[in-house]
Length: 80
Image (spheres, rainbow, N blue to C red):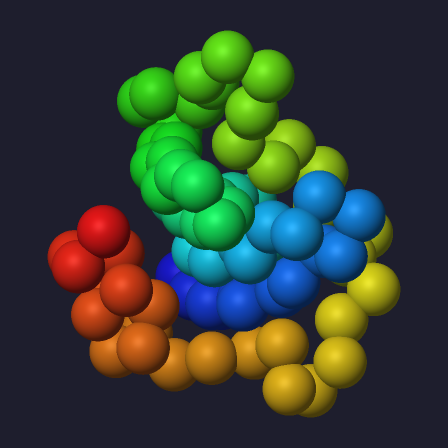
């Protein structure tokens, strides 16, 4: 099982995303904006206008700096 952890900022909505991929599929996602924090999971994939990332990991335009460790992901996940 391949686990990948991403931290990516999208400037259009000033959203910081943390996404946990398992075998190329998103299973946990954290969306942090200046005013809110939202957690999405494969068992709770949507909340309002937000949805768990449903594309392949390969679809993202990622830089090496976007990849984080499992420990970093879990630290933020458990704090929020």
